[in-house]
Image 1 (cartoon, helix red, strand yellow):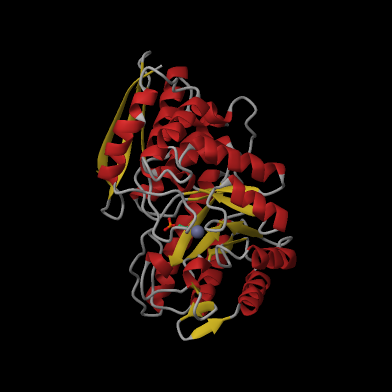
Image 2 (tube, rainbow, N blue to C red):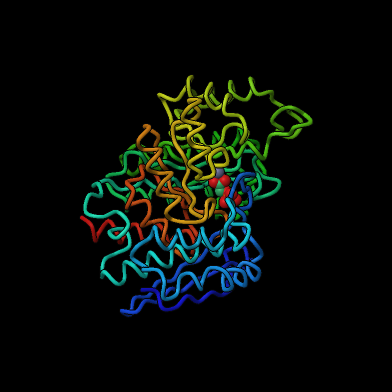
Amino acid sequence: RITGVRLRRILDSRGNATVEADVLTESGGFGRAAAPSGASTGEYEALELPPSEAIAAARKHAIPRLVDEAFAGDQRSVDGALRAADGTDDFSEIGANSAVAISMAAAKAGADVLGAPLYQHLGGAFRGENFPIPLGNVIGGGEHAKEATHIQEFLAAPVGAPSVSDAVFANAQVHGRVSELLDERDLPAGKGDEGAWAPPVSDAEAFDLMEEAVADVADDLGFEIKFGLDMAAAELYDDEEDGYVYGDDVKSTAEQIDYVADMVEEYDLAYVEDPLDEDDYEGFAELTDRVGDQTLICGDDLFVTNVARLQDGIDAGAANSILIKPNQIGTLTDAFDAIELANRNGYDAVVSHRSGETTDATIAHLAVATDAPFIKTGTVGGERTAKLNELIRIAEDAT
Ligand code: PGA
Ligand code: ZN
């Protein structure tokens, strides 16, 4: 039984405040978790409130429904209490940031009571044997770094890595190799919010840099490394222009689909996230039809970890995978429901960090628990390596 919930403001990786929750139980269980925060947030995400408001509202409405009422190990009852306390679809009353911090902290307290690691508590005895391959953000721009690429993220995908640890170190090596290539070209190498290089280069140049860097590192390590993209195209799409804006160049939807399909062919991309606007199920379906057998077409802003939006996508044949960010929807239960619906319909569920993060490593456990094929959690930087290093520890523990 939960005997206490403490909430506080802590710093995130951008220097903004976010919500951290502690959950305590009668039998001495303890869990602590913090909410991440997006910059290129989807229009249909659950709502993040200013942390002090979210904390005040959760203290008033949610904590009384949890303390002496809910069991930390019964995740659905905890998350049901959060939903009931809030009473809205988008957590606009207590804030998705309070909700997700409490939800994840309760899961950790539940695991603590059982004396089991979190991935085991969440995944149970029937968890698969696979480990997620980390997708590493190596070059990026968009909303995460101004004056860099239009495409938000160029991601290393070490698909041939024999182990999680090999994959993690491969991504770091690709990141390092890109730095050398930038240096050779006399290009400055500042970093974006997720630790990716944010050089003042065109998207075409970034493709070339990625191609060269992954080839060099694959040669050195002796296993296959591909790369992928998060285009975050809702940020590129402009209603008034009725197209995707790349500086002076504007692409129509048909041109955008051709462009992405060509890049998939030319660079053998392993993964393409949000290639089209967050309302364009039809465009997603057309692109999936064209290249969905060669690559993952993943919906982030399109689906926002929301089962109703995912069901619309399944009905339309839009994308073949979904990005899972617990704070987009507010609770672990909602995230699990989205993963289950995805898997039942042959969609891969890829677990992801946000651009604003803390050292909280819950998503590493979530990815392992749910057999995610990929986890997107950056390449370097303390808040990113917190998850990557946790994955290495889990792999050691579980094999
Ligand atoms: P965000 O970006 O956390 O700023 O939304 C990450 C993403 O788009 O995947
Ligand atoms: Zn995204």
